[in-house]
Image 1 (tube, rainbow, N blue to C red):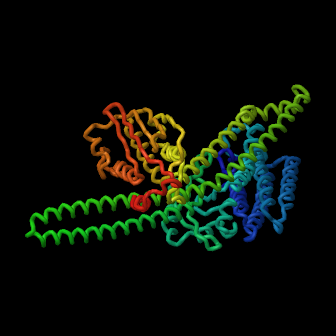
Image 2 (spheres, rainbow, N blue to C red; image 1 turned 60 degrees about the vertical axis):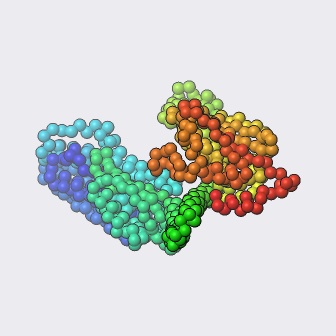
Image 3 (cartoon, helix red, strand yellow; image 1 turned 180 degrees about the horizontal axis):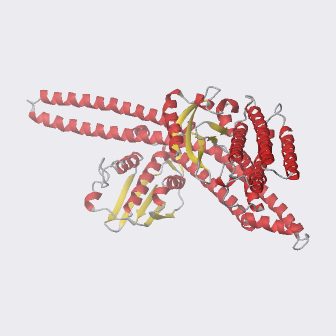
Length: 618
């Protein structure tokens, strides 16, 4: 990337001098590229430095000949000679035998400032004084333009700030030139890949790309540099230690203020964990599909056998009709059992995945929460220190230079706003972390992966955790009102009751068109407890109400409902030896009441064996 861009205003009008100036600009830019690539080991910095010294001597010698040929005043000529000799001495003070990055950067700053002054002041004035140029109008060379030219050196300082910021971020970052070769990698990139900078520089980083991804990725990469457009990509890289990482990369073009394309910048995030979870989910789905195919084949075989048996006994017409009816009922029951098993296995897989994700999230949330607490204390200490500074500020001389500088510094960073806002930001961040922690807890409570047996459970906690899980479905559709009463703990399968509550709450939200109210009531009476979910939705007609618990019956559009939610809920409550009551009128909303008997295991024993065993079929 060029440090010094040649512009028409640098022209002196004297062809030879302008040619020399362009060559000096090229050499300074080449030195900048060598320093940026940290090319000390290859000797590139020293080589360019020696070329620059030799060409500068040649340029000064040519200028002095032109001065003598044009009859320059002897005193002015001697002053130019002394200026040339002084600059050569300063330039040669940078030893080419001990060049490092810091020495190279110091030399670049010095050269950019010198060349700006040399072109815009010294040589332009010399050409105009001698009358050897062809400039038709004289450019105003006031001090402001000299300062503007010298500001080019500020680029170096800006680049250092960028490197420091990039090294402090956990994302993997890089910069490339217009040809696609990369000139910068932050510390996160080097730590993730275990590659050292000299190996990654230029095109060395390409050796890490997984062979299966390399051709497609490099095609997109070079296309972006040819067309000056950004891109997103997923790719695998092999670290020096032999690990394979999945990266999600985003790259964007970079431009100068004048619109010139100077390469791309890229940011990569390690998504290896997400990819691992995705592959595991695909494996589970494939296994599930295989089980479905096996069971379907078994059902098909049984069906063929029953049909063949029915045909063989065609002569026994009356008995055949009875057998056909029994067979059809068996097939329907098998189909229903099959779909219920499929739904249960999917819910179990989702529950296990939810619990795993919740566990993975819980640890980093703990770190963030702890760090936020420490950060809050640090900020409080800093604000105490700032308050002391403000008290000391009053002792400064009123209207003095120090007081003005402090006032300007405060205004430039909006000190008062930051000081007032930072505590609120930390408080909101802490509240957000606490919200995430509650959601993680509710996910674990809802899945109950470690509680696949009959236990005493607090139904209020079950309802609350279910509400948190489905809150995104409810919060824009309804206000949720809780009317809880004192309930004893219920001996049940809590995870299956959670599924019932989830189905009823989602159905209530879907029944509300714009915005309404969902009321949840609980009571304990007559050796049973009941949970009531009432909505202000569109209600249910008498015809639909007769069929709502039938398997596969749904009033929703195709693709939005399976018709198994209420059927499964009914089966779960029935196997808890309970029942579901429904009251509804079209246009007035619906009320579903789930009634479950209270089991006192110590007095009457556990539920019947067949009830406990039936849980595996739901």
